[in-house]
Length: 68
Image (tube, rainbow, N blue to C red; front, side, top):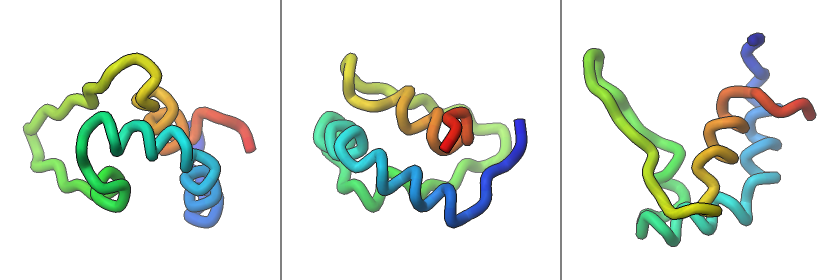
């Protein structure tokens, strides 16, 4: 899978607004904090939320799975 360009990434995030708002509400985390995180080497993190919160949507967009 090819990496996506920064401008394309920003556009995909804009298009995800409604799903990110649902995820933000479900996790009780401000939207701007959802997309900023540092993962230390050897750490394991999970993305948890109710059905329809946008977990897969966010990961697919960030990974560049969806065509534009």
